[in-house]
Image (tube, rainbow, N blue to C red; front, side, top):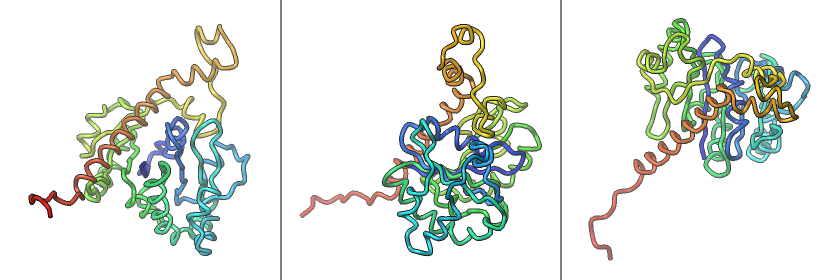
Length: 280
């Protein structure tokens, strides 16, 4: 089990939509926590199109004050229908976000414990460097993913933060790049060299299909043979076979493989040395 935190620097690379896209096809139970400190829940306004009024991180503050944070966490999570994922939505205003600063540290500990025992955790931590940023949620993660587009302004904006994330890395808790729109215009290898961080995966540039997660849009109609054959599952089959969804699936598996490797390496790192003696 793992705790994975997604962050960005500028250019709206789609942290919230990528978190939901990854979680929607996660192979085991996963909790998504929207901890963007901007104070405007992109998931409620976007994916759920403002149709839900659900408890979220703000309500966890009350649970923490009552000493019930761990118990309340999963109870307050909103299921992502048709998946093994559930979501804790973020604050809805900057006034609400201001009250979350003292929540991040205890929440990080609860999420860390949850990821060790029961299920994976994906945290949408929004933009780095913002006031009231959920730094503990990044510091406790097994893996921090910096989402970056592949154009020059995005790479330039990410350069100093990439250095900071690399310096913060510890054995078993590291940072990598997750690219959005590879080859627009720079390749994954070029971006990785420029920022000095390894690239764990790349999400295809496809605003239409990404809008399913960012804006709650319906699945795009199928094309070609799938359109001619029709059927109620045609759109879902076309979406599942799209280059966008294939890139999400590939990134998901690469992330899970990387975390599994980190866990193995961390276990070796903290393991006590074997005794050379013959014992008692």
